[in-house]
Image (cartoon, rainbow, N blue to C red):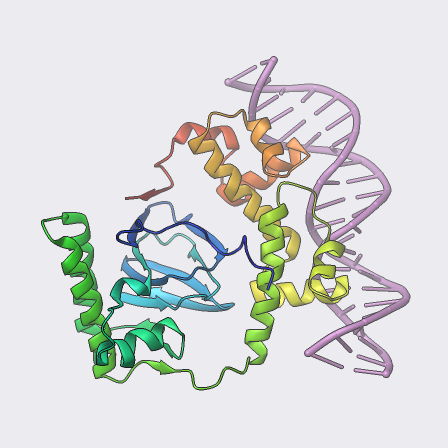
Length: 300
DNA sequence: GGTTAAATGTGGGTCCTGTT
DNA sequence: AACAGGACCCACATTTAACC
């Protein structure tokens, strides 16, 4: 499968402890995360507000005090809902962190099946789930432990993850994947992964719809319809949005001129770049640059 | 579900002026 | 000088409807 760049290569945490928490305070309701996937499992906990997550092209609204499990290899993205501020935490970890060299019941019944995808985490957990409150309390505790970094915090984090797994097991909420046959949606997701991978690899250059359609083995007209039906955006507006997100990051982290950034992210028309930037960010690039790195959303 | 042609809409290139 | 943005226009993207 040609999805090597779409697949995130970041090591979350470090090799000795592959777990990292990203806490995002989105006070401007501008949060947006492009489609990507990784080997790690991700637990999203929304502390305040609401956020829309797309998992395998299906939108899921996660409200305050709910959590979402994103299983490994799942294509996902996220975005803020208009005018709703939010705070959320993303716990990203390698399932191997819980592996043990002893092939005990924990390993054979839960960890191994989660690693080889014959078992999956349930997606959304809210207060109505019988185990919901326990899981949410454990997640809040895990986040506090992570940031507290007291002696032995790594052990406490692992213990919390195991407890979360035990709560899910207790209510029989794990999803058993007995068949490896791809559903129609899985097939579409695999095709869209190839296209998004192509976009992420080539966004700095001119991208034609015909090229993308060729990658997907479709004609261009059908491709546009296919792409929009899954992502909710036309290919060009998806590419533009992706380029603007890249430009926004460069504006706040690098000292390039606005015009240089315009060309770096693949626009070859400065005027059009400003027009699109305003459309997505509600301000001009230079205004955005002046705001500094922490005005739109903060990553703890 | 997938393809095609035609119609329609939009992206984006060029040029320009105004503002900081 | 660098940046912002309006007007115009055409190529290309997207939608629609009909078809396999």
